[in-house]
Image (cartoon, rainbow, N blue to C red; front, side, top):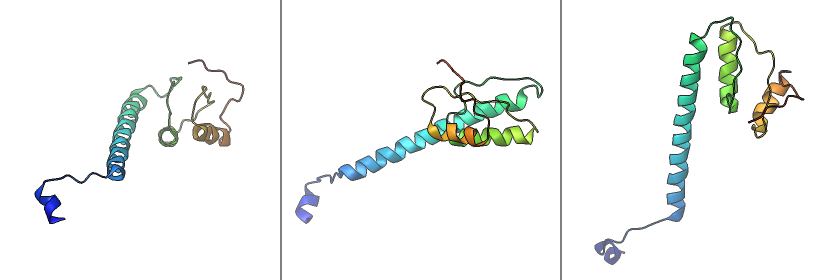
Length: 110
């Protein structure tokens, strides 16, 4: 082992490299999620309270849906309906279906 150290051989573990890559991607995804929420927060809190809106591609995650609902509740507002486009994660569809807001026959084009 000492001889290997003297040769300056680097020990490489594919499992360790994969863990680092997974952690790096998770960190990047978390930063992207925070950026989306920050942009949407600015829009939401500066819009006119009585103005209607149609959101596309938001909420895209269950966390975003839950945070958006908290914002709506804080302003004593509520959603009237939710349409899900093809490919929306099943967790979001179930979330709004359980609240009775999902329009089952709603068609949304990309």
